[in-house]
Every structure is written in structure tokens, then in C-alpha cells.
Image (cartoon, rainbow over all chains, first blue to last red):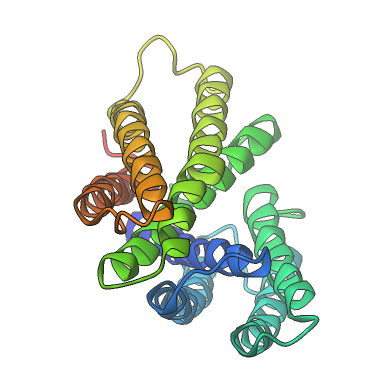
Length: 124
Length: 153
């Protein structure tokens, strides 16, 4: 059970990476085409829900972790930041709005921060 | 058991972070390449063909190097060099094989991008070859992620 939860949690995280890389290309001025953006958005939706639900499930399942551990609460806060900025980046970059790229980089930094918390688990 | 599985020495954190970061960048880039080149062969622009090539050259290959070097660092930290368990072998097999596929895919994508820039078409056959090679690599990486997460044997 633990192994499969971890595998699916990781898989969901890798889907977020597809979105982060695709929108980074857009933010850097590349033309990705419609299909790439649609795939990236789908990955963001599935990966976002997957990381949160499976992450909380893991926290409840593993004896040493609690949902209210500092690093897990921090991860949830970063997930909320990534979700909020991700939605804004999606809309603004699609419209070619000025100032859209910084919003995307905040989202990417939040995803990177999530990875840091997942690896170091400060306080665990 | 589950508690033990979640604990590891602090010394492993940096190479593990770099390993996962490299893997995520690699898989993310291959996802972008696949989606943009599938779009290109359905009548996309020269720009998407060029994006596929540049993504492979400037993101996927460097990410593979980060993944591989950090994997060696981890294997050394965990003293798995001598008698590597099966899941480590899966990692080696996947990374080595897909590196060859990525090299071939990058060369094909480069030729396709050059042809597209000259107005000789978007390199339909080459684009398809790149998509197939990248898709095979993606499937292999999903298997590797499963092996790294579940650590069979």
C-alpha cells in the first residue's frame, strides 16, 4: 500500500513538472502550440489533485508523520500558492498579458519549494 | 516498517534532491517535446519543430546528466556499488538505454528543424521518429519511477 501511494504521489509530482517545463518555455518566449498547452493544463489538474490527495493519504498512513507536522503544513501552503499562481499564469500567458511570466516563475518556485520540503522534511 | 521506510540519513538529501530534480526536468521536457511535435506533425509550425529540438538539446540532455551524476552520488552514499539491488539495476538500465534514444531523438529533431527552417516541410517522418523515441523513453521512466518508489527485491 505504502509503495503504491508513494509511486502515484511521485507520478503526480512528475505531471506537475510537465506543466512547469511547458509554461517555462512559453514564459521564455517559445511558441509551444495548442496541444502542448492542453497537455500541460491537463497535467497540472491531475498532478495537482494527485499530489495533494495522495500526499495527505501518505501522511495519515505513515506512522512517523502527522498532517499537522510543520513541513506538511508548509507543503500544503506551497501547494496553495502554486495552485493560485498557476491559474493566474495559465490565464495571463494564454492572453499574452504583460507581467505574466513572473507569475509563472512564482508558481515554478513553489513547485521547487515543494520538492525541497519533500526531500529534507524539516522537523520530521 | 513504514516508519523506517520514510527515514534516511541527512547526507543523502542533496543528491536525492538533485536526482529527483533532474528526473522531473527530464520527464517534463519529454512531455513538452512529445506534445509539441505531435502538434507539429498535425500541421504545426516550424517553431514547434524547433522547440522540440531545442528542448531536447538544452533541457533534456543536461537534465539526464544531472540525474545520472546524482544517481552515482546516491549509490556511493548508500554503499550500493558492490551488490546493487534489482531496483538500482532497473535505474541503470533505464538511464543508459534512454540516453541512446535521447541522442538519436536529438539528432533526428535537429535534422527535422533544419529542414523545416529551409522550407522543406516539417520533417514529418523524422518528427514521428522523435515522438516514438521520446514516448518509449517516457514509458521507461515511468517504470523507473515505479522501481525507485517501490524498491522491489
